[in-house]
Image (cartoon, rainbow, N blue to C red; front, side):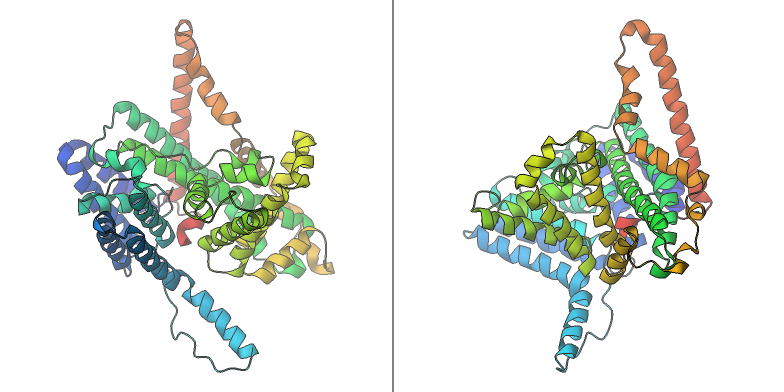
Length: 477
């Protein structure tokens, strides 16, 4: 079950919110916990026990860390167990396939895994949640949660369960027991949810349809211009898909009385790869910084060691997204450019006009998205060649440019370009800052905002109800 599904929008969410606001305060956590369990089981009906096992063992590990003399030893076991579970379910097939290829090449007998190992829903996210929790307990940055139900709620909170943001326990520990959801919280949260839903359904979905159509073409039938439409469409699809989901998660958490961190800060306005990663998937990049990069030595060690640390972190970041060489190369691609920006290239880049800096950053990011989107490495390389007009055949013009960039797609891309900048946010909030003497203008603008929210909600609900193209990229992570 995802936020943009009819079951969630028209049944699950209204019912949960109605019950949440009529039951006693002491029962609210139990309701959310029960609703979160149902939410997860609907999406992971066969392997739901994995997350239950994770909750139980990490609850015990956290208690053990607080009472053990050798806290580092218990923490090491806890991290090892969690990573072992993640590696088995997420990477075993990938490792098995590559070992099979290697052994065949060496003409050595190899017995592969006899069945495909299923990837449990949201395992990458809840594994990172529990690891950060254990580390913070050991560091003394968080107080252990002795109530199993409250710890389970932290892991299972349905707004962030399957796609984040990655919330650290210390940031919401107090909110698990004491929180207030006011009328303003509901209004702000609902508005944020609607904006996220609109991003997902009205922008990401149609752009995704275009991107999928182009990426599914064979290399011999895809022209350079069509390939650029495909990667531009995917660039905006993945942003509005994931940032839209984060908006919906943040909005739902706000309705329930929780305040959590922002996950995106207009990454496509960046003028460097370094800035991009300060703005993109903030909860993930900050997680790797605090729990991997800094413990490895960060920038406190020698230059060579620092460069190795950075590359390792981004290789891990790529593999976190998926078990394939394409994801690994995507992470390495960003890591290499981050290293280059620490050299004279970064200093020279900073002297260039802002438009050139922005063009450089977007070029690097978009080429990286090819590796992220392509099904395998060979397809990614073939697609990049097509982007630059290499290896084109006579059949490359079999699908004309206007077939993919019709008026509707052009309109959606235009809105996406504007929506990926702070322009809309600034315009949206500008009139709210007016003086009281302009109350009538404020009231009028407030009415416009309400009408716009209603239009976005109705259009989104209509598209969802009609069963239009509705994938979710991060659902598989």
